[in-house]
Image 1 (cartoon, helix red, strand yellow):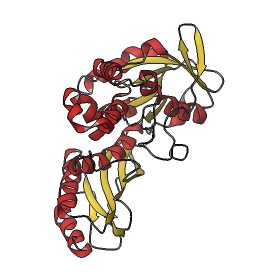
Image 2 (tube, rainbow, N blue to C red):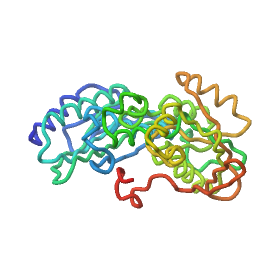
Image 3 (cartoon, rainbow, N blue to C red):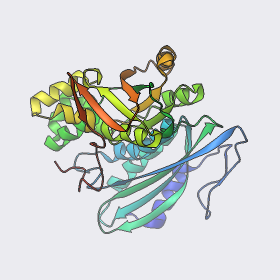
Image 4 (cartoon, one colour):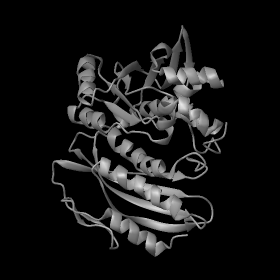
Length: 336
C-alpha cells in the first residue's frame, strides 16, 4: 500500500507545469486562478464514481477508469457550451490498494488531462474501508452570455442527439457477461469503459447560439430529456423509428437477449449531447456537426406544450418520463 504522502508527492510531480490561467497550483491550501476577463464566465461541475456502483475493477482497467473519471466531468462542461480548464481530484483509496491499481489509474487521469488541455490543481486523498472512490471537480470557461442551459427549450423546437444511443448500456451488459465476449463488440466495450465527451460540438453549439437547451446524456434519453422538459416547462415527443441505434447494439441485443428498447431509451452513460434548436435552424445545426470533426447528428423529436416525455411508436403514445437510471431507485448500477 502506497503512503498518503508519497501518493500526494507523486500526483504533484505529475501535475507540474505552467499555465497562464494558474497562479498557484498544488501545494497550498487553495489553488489560485487568474481572472479570465469580463468576456468569460466560469463553469464548475463535479462527479463521483464509486466502486461497486459506477464501476467494477473486475473488468474496468484502471487506466481507462482514470480517463473516464475526468471525461464524465468534461462532458458536463461540453453540455454548457464551454471549454474545460482545470480539475481537482479526490481519492478514497482502499487499504488493500497497490501501486498496480494507483499508478495506471493516475496515468490514465493525467493522459486525459493532457488530451483536453487541462491542468490538475488540487484535491484530497483519504483511506477507504470499502472500495475505491474518485470524486472529480472540473472548472471550465464559456463566452459570457453563451452558456447553454436546460431551461431554454420552447414548443416547436426540434430535439437532436449527437450519436448512437444505448452503446454504453450494451457494453456494460457485455462486461457483466464476461470479458472474452467483448472482442466481437469493441465499440460497445469502449462506450462503457472509455466514453468520449462531445467537447468540440458543445463549444460550437454554445458559441453559435443555436441550441436553446442542452444536456449530456448520462442517465438515458428518457431521464435526461425529462430534465430539459422540467426546467423549460414544456413536454417532448420522440419518435421511436428515428432513435439512432448502431448495428453492433442491435446484434448484441439479439445474441445475448438484451432489451433493445430499454438500452435505447433508458441506458445511461452514452455521454452524447441532447439538445434542442428551432426548426428553422436545422441546416445550420447540421453544418456545425460537420465542423466538429464530421460529427453526425440525429433528429429524434419535437418539443411540445405540456409536460413530460412521450415515445411515439406506430401510432401508440407511451409516457417514458424519468425511465432512465436513478441512483436512489436502483440500489446498484450493476443490478438487473
